[in-house]
Length: 496
Image (tube, rainbow, N blue to C red; front, side, top):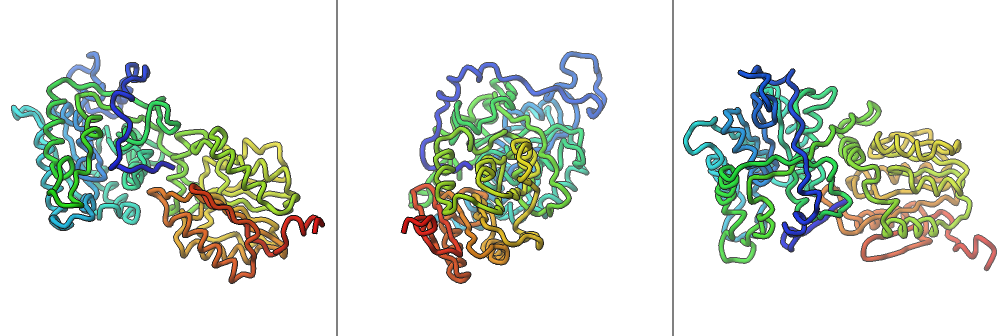
């Protein structure tokens, strides 16, 4: 999980460009001739090139300015080739200055939409020889895309069905911003995958905040999926003019506190010039029928599809040390019957299996479950299943000796977490324990913070008659063990 502060300096352009891979990034694959409208010279070189081909293009932006930052040069090239381009701005951008005393949200909403129109006007051919750019604003509240996901998905499905684009540009799902992630996931559901509304269209995702929080050696940077579209000086200058139209973002609203520029000059430097980098990533696998469509399954499927080990649990010392602490905190050497909630690729499961009579490991992601099953194939006493615990635990589970709540509690609303804990109380055997560990710094897709999760766990434990037998506090994570058996390890093993 990525967290960042846009107010602080990020990775410099020089650091990114110093990596030798930068100079060898490939161009996107040509478009499929079967979906591109007939061209005058179909045998000419580049007839089905991403830019030179014919056919409509739709650009999805989570906020006004995303389209220009991430794809402004490509948009300028496309309209100069006569391509029909529709830019869909999903949110109103009114949350960019939450502490402003000079510009209320209503005024900022109107300003940012006007800036978007002015920016797109800068991207068209000044000689009037190219195509105009259509702007569609959905008006979702800035920061509220996750809550409006189903409505936005329906609106975009209708728009795409009407425009029938051969190419769709959208924010990269791994960008580290919640609105970007949700819109990227919706785009991946609708474009370029089996069962999608446009299975033959091409989806390219543009990173924005990755250039800030990432770096050439960051484990979440998808070098193997990068493609680069080069543009000439003319389209590069058009993009610069377009960015300048977003004065509310690149300049202070006023000299008052809370009106500071949102985009630092050293961050904007990443988007200067005609070349742009996109991610050509596969669409996420569809969620299995047993998992409700309104869960986090698509998000976690996409995360696991991008990387074999998305959080570096096998490689990062932080993760290996934390795992050792969790396992050492369990008060019983033999674990009996274990339920692990949020098993991901099964690394913790593998260690639990060494001490357990049986383990049921569950995860909402079918991609993660598939990897965990491969890892644990030689363990006959371990089952790994797809399950959505926000809908509660299966009624057949009972008399569990240990419930492991991995770092999933903060993805649940307080109400869903409370309902899950009611089920845990129902299935936990006399003498049984619950262990929970959570990151404390938050992320854009959390429903609540790690501290709030552990406060809820402590309150539940008190009401359910469990004792906190282990409490471990660090700056980065919390680790708690609650048990129906209040005895210490020394007491359990006869040392006192």
